[in-house]
Length: 188
Image 1 (cartoon, rainbow, N blue to C red):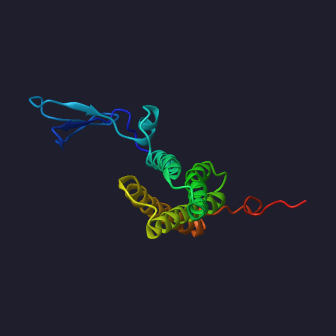
Image 2 (cartoon, rainbow, N blue to C red):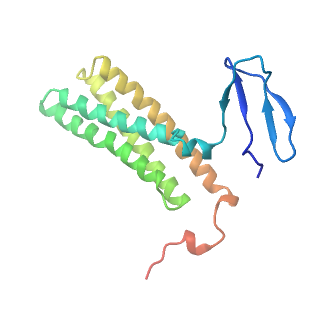
Image 3 (cartoon, one colour):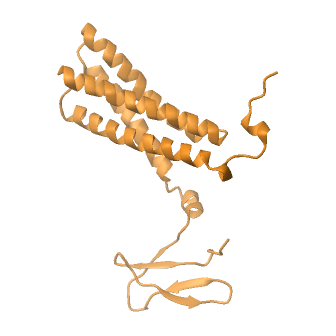
């Protein structure tokens, strides 16, 4: 692994002006002295220590916000028998999408992660379906509904792509354990 402890990137007005200067133990970057400089450090470990959210953290937050907004939207729907059933299904699937993604991030194995991401993709598809049903029935309309429908489509696309990628990566021989006990369940 390369040593990045003393690596500095100087950013100047949005453009990087990097000049390599080799030190004895590490690599340093310096910019001309006459320009105003700001220091930037790189690396995901540094970012985590500083509280910078990862893409997975941002996606989890986005799914949670979607679930909360769906629940608030469901409260505004009319209370007739045809709408109540669809509203209940939507109120179940949107929070399940967020909860299952949260559970997938804490999976104990790659196989469990792949399975849970499949569940997340199914719940995202179901949320989109119930929003489409509301739109086609004429019950769902307005700016908030349009935002929810757009967000559900985007989240579904993200989660389906993530599930496909996770499945493809799991199928690669280098990513699977050679120990058969890890892959098999223990039945007494």
